[in-house]
Amino acid sequence: MNREQLTAEIRSMVARIIKQPEDRILPDANLFSDLGVDSLLGVEIIASLDRKYSLDVPEGRLKDIKTLNDIVEMVASFLANK
Image (cartoon, rainbow, N blue to C red):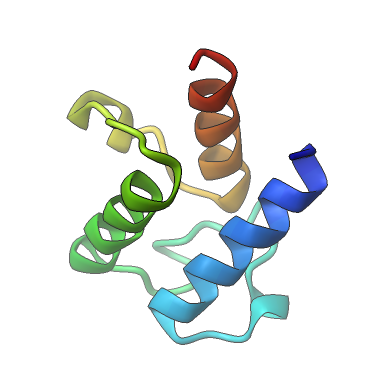
């Protein structure tokens, strides 16, 4: 899967979870301040990523995830190291 496909998949997943149109999920938009994601939705996003991509995201990495680009980078990094 290339980076563009991964971004599209993750954007779709995030949009579904936070109940926003996909076109509002811009790569550099802050999920929390720009899109209204709260900690509960943030946990739901990470849990969905864990299930879909068989990830085990350490809690320490969660504070670094603020944008769609951050999520894509993290998932791509985990997938590359599998």
